[in-house]
Image (tube, rainbow, N blue to C red; front, side, top):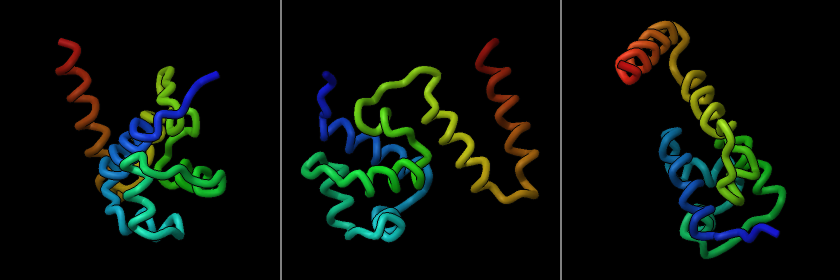
Length: 110
């Protein structure tokens, strides 16, 4: 049976929160919890309810297995992150974002 490492879980949550540009306060507001509770989760001091885990998964576009255990394949979490970032980009600039991503991929594969 897999064990949950709360510090590593918290680090994954914090990384994703920061990647999506959420402050701890904004995430706490979306989760309907206190910023202190968010901090405790990110530091691995406290766990969370299933309801909070489900909300967190939805808000941060992370699958629950990745949040809890760090399990990745082609990482749905990474794909979800890219999708979330794409939707955060103003619609009129999305084609530029795609162009930049293609240029980056092409330069990285050379």
